[in-house]
Length: 247
Ligand code: MG
Image (cartoon, rainbow, N blue to C red; front, side, top):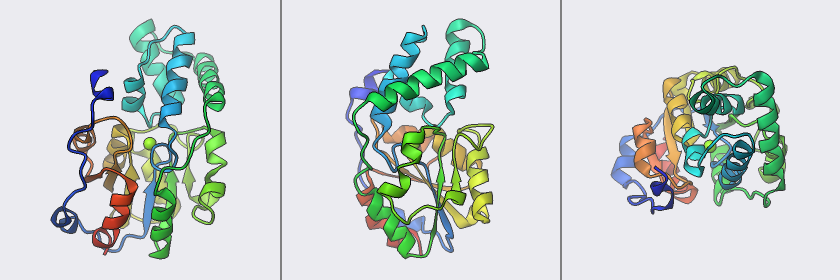
């Protein structure tokens, strides 16, 4: 499995104009954005921090495992690996401890930059009068607190769903259903932008049209298999397609 992480993504081309036009969405009132890998180029650091924190606690997690599990809450991730490798669930205290080790390592890693094109995409969405909602499994305060600094005037505190709000992380639909509820809209009036297979699954389980931007090392196929309606190779390609996709 770890092979694909070093492989080129192959086939990571922009969808054709015809494909995009056939998927056009009308009357979209809000776009629900995932955070890591969609707004911040943070997944490399998350992967490194998870691998090291798990290793310190006698759990093996590869970098690819991190990308495949992206979107789960910290507790959910730790519990899956504990069950597999310890033969039992992790206790609440173990989850809290390992997640703290992971967060502390994350905070020592190189500064995380916004994803190239994310600000322009968000500004274009705002300019079209479409609301912006954050739906993340993250509880990484250092990034949540940076949203306003890096994306000024884009997000509202009351339109955010984070690890602190939900019982079930992605791939459960709860985070996206809560995002719809906070925005006061139905699934048909929303679009999700995700980068992770479990995030795509969560959004589709909530009944929402889901755009994937493949900013990581996994093949596009993983995102289509998770249920993505369309996959773009990067934010610039999505921004270019926006006027055709949202009519
Ligand atoms: Mg993500």
